[in-house]
Length: 73
Image (cartoon, rainbow, N blue to C red):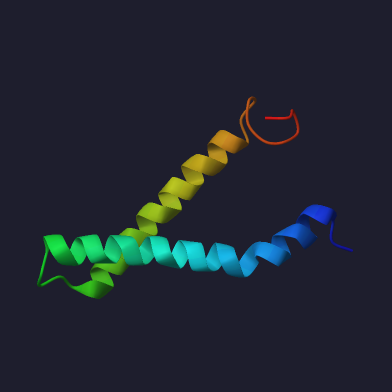
């Protein structure tokens, strides 16, 4: 049986996906402005890779001694 945190996440999953999609769209537009003849598939891969790196860095910060919700921060 899922915990309360999992149930709460399920209620927000669609919004999280939409928000990340908007972030990708934001950087797609920036790439298009800066490089008019851009290869969109290559740009998409680069954008997604950078978002993954950012998420990894955020996750590492949350799981450190000062991060996370276990200690009320």
